[in-house]
Amino acid sequence: MRLSANTLLLLALTPLRGFAAPAEPDKIDAYVTAEMKGEHIPGLALGIYRHGEIVKAQGYGLANVELDVPVKPETIFQSGSVGKQFAATAIMMLVEEGKIDLEDSVTKYFDHAPEIWKPVKVKNLLSHTSGLAEYETGPRTKPGGPFYLRLDCPEPELFDKIAVLPMDFQPGEKWRYTNTNYVILGMMIRKVTGQFYGDFLAERIFRPLGMTATRIISERDIVPNRSSGYEWTKDGLKNQEWVSPSYNSTADGALYFSVLDLAKWDAALYTEKLVKKASLDRMWTVFPLNDGKPNSGNYGFAWAIGKQNGHKVIEHGGAWQGFTTYIGRYVDDGLTVLVLTNLDSGHARPGKIGHEVAALYNPALELQKAKAIQDTEPERTAFVRATLESIAAGTADPQSFTPEARTFFFPDRIKDVAGLLKEQGPAKAIEVMERSDQGDEPVRQYRLTCKDGSVLFTLRFSKDGKIASLRFSPE
Image (cartoon, rainbow, N blue to C red; front, side, top):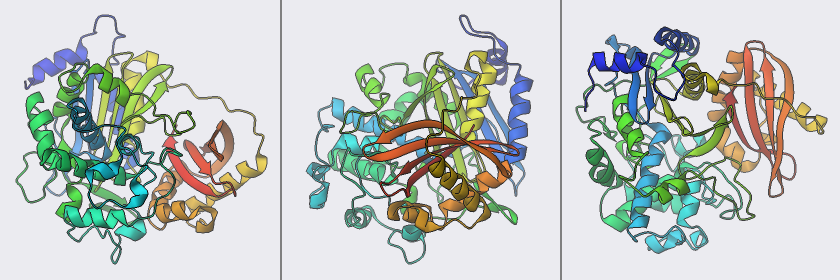
């Protein structure tokens, strides 16, 4: 049902029984507007839902800068990897119908799957523990690469190209976020149902929930209220780079949606309209590695599971073609915050905005600055600080990274990290926040305090001390 402007305003101003009164709308608006200015975000849509009911659905800035079109609640943004949760839900539907088994080898569903995939199970694809290599790296997607994003690549050809990539590790041994996993899951949906995964989502999820604006990306179709994606460069704002239709139709995150449609999705997740509670609980439980320990990403199936000031949050971010997205479901509080922007991931930080908005809406979620722990590895800490400073300066040594991480970050993705660091200003101090191990590989989280803010970095190191993975989040 489409809500009127008056109804939205009433919901935004009415305290809900058993819940802290929300911050005044102008506080949230002022915060969002200030963040947009600081991050150079052209347009943003914000959704705040309480048990699936819209509390606030508002647009800020411009959906299209060239035409001076403002963002509205109806404005359509690209999903990025937030779209993975729809593919995961489709898989769980098929699991409940007995058409897929989470314990099955992936090779059961593909006649020409390589022999090395036999140990890879469906659950490994869903949880990013498969060991399949990332197809979407700079060297592989640039001109001349096997996955050059401007060349059309039909699904059978895409599968064959993925099938010849090497395995990064043995299934279940580690966790590594890899878009390849969900590309294969989308192909699996077609193998099992005979339908393109986007058609399956439309038939089984979007239409039943009344998500009339949500669909697969298509630049050729006429799509009402579609926004434009942008990148912030040294020369200012630029339009997103074009990619071929085949790479805009894979299950790793190639959807259009709006904050109005996502309220319907959020509401359905409180029910068993789509899948049973047991399936949802499986998706929202941190997947264990082969050694029984939680994976380093605190990841379930298409959702990361964490805490905000002691309150459980299941969340996911996304980025693609000049769009960035974030959804956070604070399940202890019945609160969901959705942030959609039309700016690239090197500059827009929808996750940070989402966490802060949640805290403004419910003071019990106010972010607390974590305390550092004792540094028992000063040499490693000094290496990390020097590496981060070199990244910010544009002089990072690729040899400080493992071959897999080197392929993933250089030459393009490392620039996104550099952009984040530059925005924070010169480094002032570094502290150790968490210390753990993933198998025989150390995992460490650091807080880098800079002139204009602080950033949390989580790094996984190989046995010889090189950086195997690096994830960051503004604190």
